[in-house]
Length: 90
Image (cartoon, rainbow, N blue to C red; front, side):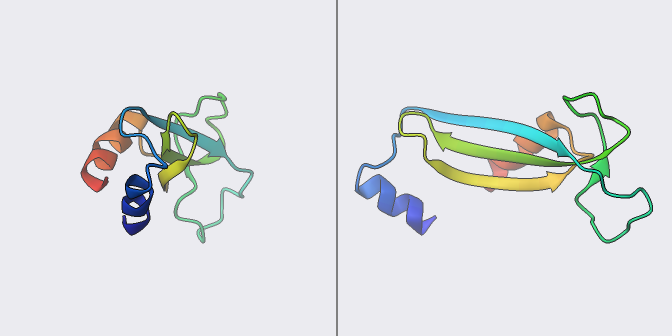
């Protein structure tokens, strides 16, 4: 948050255009593995529902392309649910 404040003061980021996006990545982690709590089965855009996945949401400055913040979340969380959580977090 302090870094964002510095960028705003130096006018390095735009207040007019922010881009929010979510994506997910499927993994080849073994089904029997219990060490990774983020990689979970869920619906993914690649159609590989049989594989575990991890979700990622992020906010970019749409004019300068700077990544402002991100969140990694379990693969069982839907994009719409993550958006509601992100609004409370940021």
